[in-house]
Image (cartoon, rainbow, N blue to C red; front, side, top):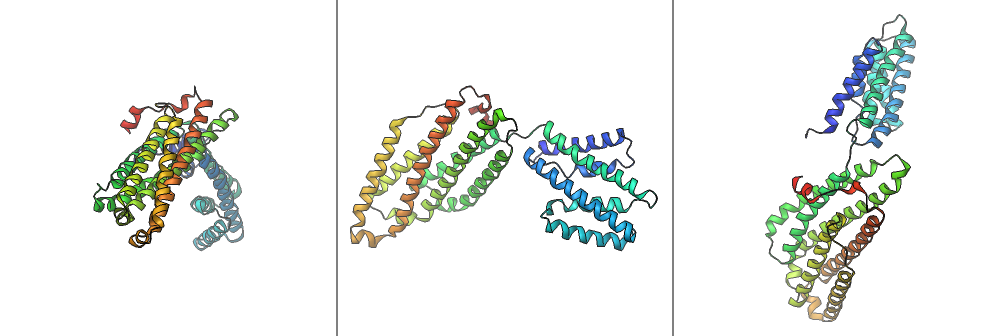
Length: 361
């Protein structure tokens, strides 16, 4: 586990909860510290949702505890029976993530002395609620999570490594046993990028002024992740269809390699274009279209030859060519999104990601 902001914020939240509880002279401030450990989440949005669910769990635990105590007392068997009821109820309400807090609330309240039960139970409930709110305040104010720069850096690094493998695989220069081992690792890295994108999407701006900025960035990064997934699929197809590709006529092999080289270069260029390091070039799209059309025309002509069709799994090559067409179209769409984004955000300092930072991370 890496030491990050979330770990420090958990410590700050516990400290704040204990401090406020003691400041208010609450009899059992430790309960506030316990509750504070449940509410720190990776994004402010998730923390907000968590607060709502935890308050519900806290209320459910308190109500069940009061009802059971008033009806049957606080015998150990009754406490265990109450735990079963709360777990079933929380699962039915789809609040399973907060079962632990509800159980803590029930136990804390049911262990309240018999005299002045309702008063003491109310104080303990308030103490737990204080801990929950302390965590939310800390998550909102101290070191608020910022995932955009981390997301771009991870996309850039995974893309760079993936495109290297696509290049050398298309040239038949790769060690296929090495690539076989690398593919699961790359898949895991792509999955982590998707998780980070989800966190970035949830970490939305709450001011109306930033709403359009954030929405444009969400769409743009979604397209980057889509293309990253597509390039990974192409890499897998190049590996699985290696024997079919080798048996293609030399002319088609060279044209496929040329098309892949062009698309990979475009992919790299667009990541730099997002940083404002290069400009778009409309002529490149014409070149890509011409290469694609020539490749498709030649392949269709070859399909008319029965010998050609008999010598290879033609549907494998058709699948690969279709993926390359999709790849090109998705890259063109990304270029349009970047162009629109930069048109409306020429002076936006939120996109201040440097090449030096890519090297450092």
